[in-house]
Length: 320
Ligand code: CP
Image (cartoon, rainbow, N blue to C red):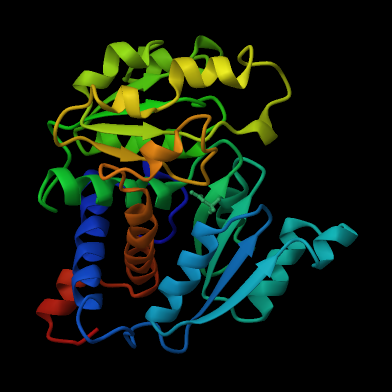
């Protein structure tokens, strides 16, 4: 893996390799070893033009656990506010010796631009670009589903995932749809018609406008954040109306299958797409998603910067 720009760039086997590597790293991290020397001497830059809590911190934790040096760059307070371009920012980071750049940007395609224009010689990892993609979120979601429903093995065949809510503005939904289908899961998008993108018929997923019709059949109930900051129009009459039709509530959760799980990428609008009781319930794996994000991002850094797969390295006898 040279870069991680889109889930579309990964084959099924490469995606499973990331999940397997993350599983092994998680297993090793549960022991006494909390830090591995693998990326000693390498520099990872977190280049965040948009706000983030989970993604930025977990990439930082992941890089540090692999002994890389980490530079955190936030657009706020940088020369970006003086009008510096993405190209000049990238060239500056390159001059400082960045081996990998983890980029979040409000413009769809920003990570591709960074990689394809070769402003950076190092690895480029997309940490969310506009409404386009958020590949490491999809990988950590798949990792979490596999842990709960597939005994941490293989693909996600036989699993039915409902992705609920603001599909239109969601890069998480786009990456998840690509990855879940690649891994053999069945996907149904559940939202009001105004929040379903045009052209969804080509995505190879089912669409439903009724959460109540679907909830009984889902193995994974994945609620999405209503992205008010990206909404310039009225997509539903009122928040109360939205919560009534598409909010995950304790009442609705009673309809769920015995082993099904509740997910949300965060940050949550409690009381809108998910009630506080649902978010904090026994079936919720939302906090675990965050923890798994560190293992998955360690795996991505390891596979892109380390140059070898975990299995190759383990079988060659070299220690992590
Ligand atoms: N899920 C997610 O990307 O969260 P942050 O915006 O906090 O990184």
